Image (tube, rainbow, N blue to C red; front, side, top):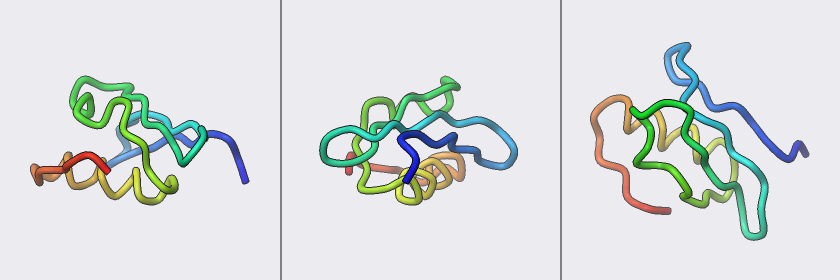
Length: 63
């Protein structure tokens, strides 16, 4: 399993997630996704869902 993934939403780079102890840590590449900065997710798919929700205007709480 890779140690990092690029997260894209609607062809926009939202950030990357990097495997760390306990999950994947999100690092925003666009100010639009700063709310997710530093959040820990169980897997890359969960981080992608959170980024999509944020892009769609849905409130996303810390995982």
